[in-house]
Length: 248
Ligand SMILES: O=P(O)(O)OC[C@H]1O[C@](O)(CO)[C@@H](O)[C@@H]1O
Figure 1 (cartoon, rainbow, N blue to C red):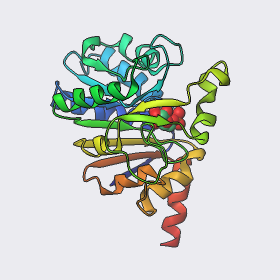
Figure 2 (figure 1 turned 60 degrees about the horizontal axis):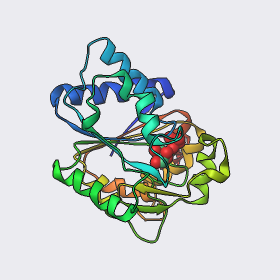
Figure 3 (figure 1 turned 30 degrees about the vertical axis):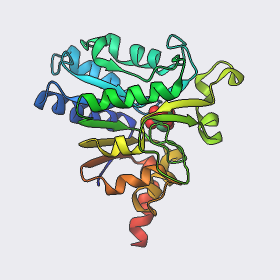
C-alpha cells in the first residue's frame, strides 16, 4: 500500500486527477470503477478541466460505478445516476452507453446484482478502481459485517451510513435504507486501486484501514492485501497516521 499525504482536499483532487488521466492516456480503453459521495467531487472537477484543456479524452473509456441506492428512481435527484451525470458525465466526451451504474429501479434487486456482476466480468474486470471510505470503513456500500461479501449484492445500509448520507436527501424518511453495491471480492480483483480520504472525520478510520487488523468489521482493512493500491490522504485525514508514526 502506497500512502501519499497531501496538504488539503484540493491537492488530493488534483493529484488523483493526474493519476487517473495518465492511466487513461496509457490505455484509452481502460475500465474504471467510479465512486460517489463528497470525496470524489473535486477530482471530477479536475478531470473535467483536463478534458477541456484537451489533456485527456474519455471517448473509449468504460466506467462501472460502485453502487446505487435501492429502491430509487434513476432520475431521483439524490440518485448516483443523477450525481454522475451532473458531476462528470455530461461535461466530458464519454459515451453514456459505456457507463454503468446498478439499476436502483430494477424489479428484482438480486437479479440486478447478478446482472451487474456479470457485466463487469464480461469486460474482463476493472483496471482502475477509485474508492472513498465511509466513517465506518465501508468501501462501495460494503458495510461492516461478519464476513466479506464477494460479489455485487443488496445491502442493508448501516445507521452510520444512513446518518452520514441523510444530508443528500430532502426528507430523511424517504431515504432508501438499502443499496446495490459491488462486492469486496470484485473490488479486490481490480488491477489498480486509488483510495481518497479527506477531512478529520476520516482520520480514525484511515488509521484502522492501514494499521488495524484485517477484518470484515472494517471492510476497507482488506485493502492491506491488495498489491497495487495508492491511498491519498490530506493532512486532516492523516492525523491518526502521524500519531502512529510517533508511537512506532
Ligand atoms: O465521500 P463521502 O461522502 O464521505 O462518502 C464515503 C463513501 O460512502 C459512499 O458514498 C457510499 O458508497 C461512497 O461512495 C464514498 O466513498
